[in-house]
Length: 474
Ligand SMILES: [Zn+2]
Image 1 (cartoon, protein in one colour):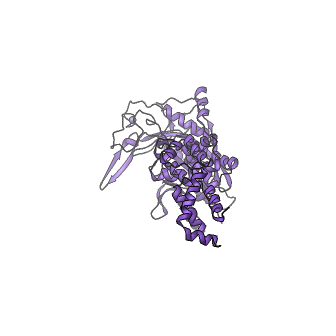
Image 2 (cartoon, helix red, strand yellow):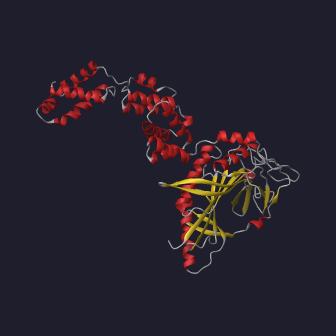
Image 3 (spheres, protein in one colour):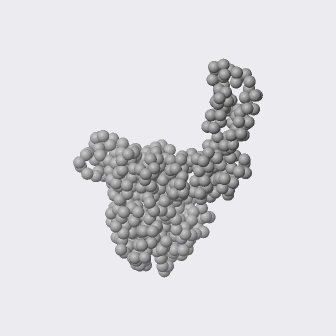
């Protein structure tokens, strides 16, 4: 590659707070337009905003998880702009003293780990939503004032692939911490990408910003497109214009939107209505208790400690509930690889088929561990175990209870197995005489017949052993 690429991401997440950023309106979506509004988020004169305590906790928690220097005192500032969807015509944000600065976040690129520096984490409010209908434009202020957190990286990423890996890792981090649902299609997590290229050793080039990319895959494609577009322009001797561009997912291209403003255009100044926020010791101590093992660390632990294949480990670490179920199940004595296979296979398929998550199913670490133990003890066949595991997702019953109720317990009663074999041999005289005459092809058939007669209750290994004995007449 002739040019070096520099990519920085700005990710906005909607915090999972009950109320908006600076008022008591519900922080929810999907309500009829302009029903979740009040004088504060509509920017009436004389109203007083107040920072949301829950949002401050979530913001500091994420900044801490991103290894940032946490602000001993963070302040709130006004970003002035003409916002048609924001009645105040300024946005409350943090410019001078954000929640966190100078952090880092590790992402996994195949077998390598890359450390991406975090420039800052700042708290702000969202704008409303414009709906353009024919000659008219309508505005819905439900989203105006919603609590947002913006996480800005340094330009440490160097390709669309790396940016996609960052977005995916970041998304599962915020889900793990419970600060955002990470749903990109619904706009809970939005990504802007700053892209520049230059000849190697020349430092950053003139950047363009691609706004509001709403899927991890589109992040990769938009950046790849933009790198190629800038390279072609440079090759033709054109100057790259600093501007904001839009990603057109249908055409797979970026388009110019507006020339980019610099920070001074926004005339930031401290908001006179909002007091600064200073976390006390109790607040900071509480953060430490909320910090859980991060998804990437979890994935790496599964690979290292349990020799679980990378893709299965990745799958488990993706969903906090699933990962916790796995850890608890292993703590109860289930062999890790076996438990991982059940979760990635049967459990996942059944959850998907029945449109459930772990939390709204009846599976528990105890139940899964019990089902696994029943197989290990030879009391349940692998195929019946699959049915049992599918049922513990749907029904509030223990595996043993399900097994007993359905009469699925395998018998190790030799007499019972001998009787099934004797019956099958008597019913298939021709096959038996062929086998005894030196053609072993029919053995599998007889085996199948015995298992069928046993209705899944016979231990296959024992049946095979006994059948062979019966055929050779020993
Ligand atoms: Zn409000």
